Image (cartoon, rainbow, N blue to C red; front, side, top):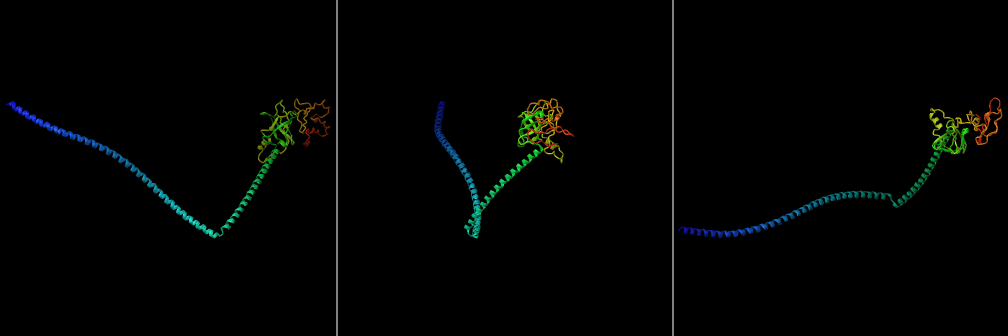
Length: 365
């Protein structure tokens, strides 16, 4: 009996379970349909969201472009406004210039009306221009003549100054610093030399000269007599080394120290300068015993080893015999002239002053 009840209860429970299983199966099918519908909706929503994002980006891009166009438009408007303002200013300036031009035209028209015949005035202006051109041409010609005259005056003034300076140097016995000459004849034993230049070559009396060989100064000279193309210079005592001789062809230059310049520098203010053309004072070095100077200088004492009295400085043979007893030793002429006559009472006759170069003898001192 119990098992029947239990079997009935089991059958009821099984039936109930089958019913609920069938009901749940139906609900499951519906839920699956709902799930499939939800998934489809989700996919569609995602597609709509993607499209919405793309549309948003496109709208944003369009918005940026619109903003750029707006900024560009604002800039263009600003530039256009500036151009309009500048054009207005230019227009105002043009109006002002137009007004001024109109005033000038009115004034010129008034002047034209007051002037009368313009053609006659133009013809008169042409005549005045021609006269002005002729006057300017004449003025230019006169200016050129004046400039040429001034140049001639300047040239003559400079030449006169150079001549005055040369004459002053000549009076003082100063040669140019770049002066050069040659020894034409050397008479070292007689204490003088002959130079190949004279007045025409810039030599002045009492000028200080030096004899050079290469860079060495061999001797010093003092100009005594000057002619046009030659001159005679005395050898300064002590300037020539012992045993040395001045040679023909030696170079002669201006002395580094001119005695005239030194004397002028040492002279006190107001002191009188030495007389121009004063005779040379230094005694010739190495003068021979006879002491007869052909240019009239005072005889010098005979040094040791002087040449014989009859020796000729020009290379002539020596005298065959010494002067006879009683003949004056100092009167012998080194150039072969006859011995002087017996000196008169009251004083000895000076030695012969005959110039072997043909010049007049100097006056007696």
